[in-house]
Length: 411
Image 1 (tube, rainbow, N blue to C red):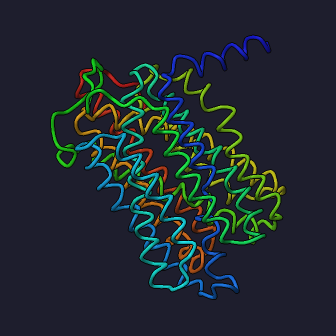
Image 2: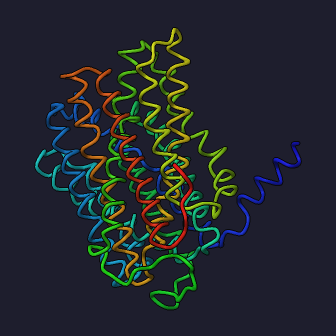
């Protein structure tokens, strides 16, 4: 049994290109330095800085605006100049801007530098997504994206833990470490990653690649809207869910921290193997539908009267984590299946913009609903919205399979 399990894990990680591993290593180093964002509100409202929560909210609003615009411009530039240059410039520029932001004490300057930082940083995402598509093959593309997600989750866990320690010493240390990890990731990218001999490579993918602008691809625009709705629901798990665990279920901070860490632990242990077993077996939209359904169900569970708050919270985190594992990697595979090599940056940008929009809207809107209508209503509403999105993804699957002449499964 142990030997068979080890063999499965080995196969799950085998066959990926060297460049895919390098890109994931760069992402791991970059995300391991992600310390400023989780502690930004605490930093701005600290006695040293003295700003209000409202001021911090404005800064985060500008961060979201910068992320949104940076995604789009980054995607456009990726198609024009190539993913290597954009990743390198984004990492170096972001590193320098982190160092600069740590020295800013004036609120207007903090706002300006925060916007510029998020703009430059977010340009990295579509370029990185395009690079993964370039260096992967059709039969392991979803696993390649999953490896990158694994690096993000590991890096986020390391960064959050180290950030808490450094913040207890001096908040300014967060900016120094974040800046130098960005710069270090850029140096590693420059040294290790093979530069493409041409801007785009010719592929023989059997995937759908409409010869239209991303804005004329109506199916993809609908897909992007549904991803935004799903992401708005999903982002409650890292913002309003911890508040509910504390105030509604009376769980301790250490246990809440363990539950959030459990999300990353499950992803690290399970995702690559599960994707290895599922990739290529069914249409991407089938797995996306199932993942979004599980996400919706995880919110409904919070309103079920169960005696054990610990058991309720743990079950919720497990369900939403498997929802994430089934949906997000195959969302990446879906957008790449519709893009052509010369417009991948635009497709990647639109996908990144969906998540940037949700990251801005989701926590804020969820908090307002919880404050005025209560957490119970928020979980019913969020769960219902997620299930509606799952139904819409399923309708897309049936529509696309019918158009291609494939008879979809009943349901």
